[in-house]
Image (cartoon, rainbow, N blue to C red; front, side):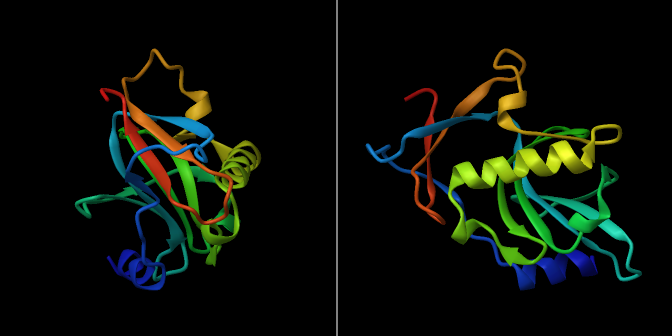
Length: 163
């Protein structure tokens, strides 16, 4: 798929969370639910039509149809977890309209921008994009916790629930 190859070349992804010991500076803890982790690309097709692509860690691609403002489809990249084919948790914002948003904003600022974007521009009619705060803790099993500090561009730490 042309759009995916272009996005992958222009916006190379690095892990945003790694498994390491949690330190005192990691004050924020976010639950990570069990599902299929991956990346959500908002771009345009060769014909100029808005295109949303979910790519899991094995690069299995799924084209999604979503009610979302077209202005976001200028090369926006979200880190997500797929709960089912029509429900995704948006954990982080890597690029916003082609600009590296991750390196210049803290996790709290990125989370707030995600909430603002989804509240303002998204309707869950076809595919639901939700934040971790919107998921009831009893609805899906928690795989672990992502822990973040207050520095822009820093990598989060994953803490498995069974440790």
